[in-house]
Image (tube, rainbow, N blue to C red):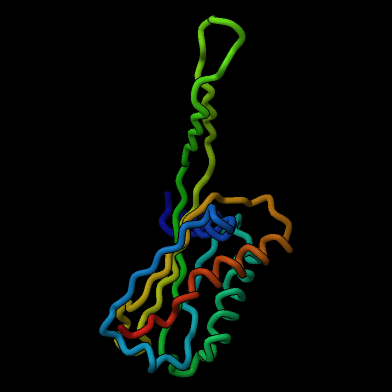
Length: 175
């Protein structure tokens, strides 16, 4: 598969990640980085395949922009402090629910109640790169079940929730 198309398909699925307890959020960062110097940012280009919804990309970008602005960091293409890159991947996942033994009448044989479900799981990576050195200094990762059938309003709420959770502890506190 062409690399650009693969990345674009991954981003499309990732931007459909659901929220709530079904989304796992992780962070990694360089503790020696001076986060206090971050005042402006710009987005690195997001390459999209034709089947990828630009509307979904824009909703997620807007959600991240809102988080940055809430932290006093302004969008600026004029010599930004850092750059934001977004990419991701998808994979098939299987959920197995074992409800234990079922209880039938009398002394007859018992069976196990097990439910197996296959679903698409997406992971979105949001990387922050120093504007001058081009070195990665922070990464946020959200993983959850993809839900491409959500309405535009539901998608916006979910993307806002994912972005809020991704950046809840950004910038990291000094220890």
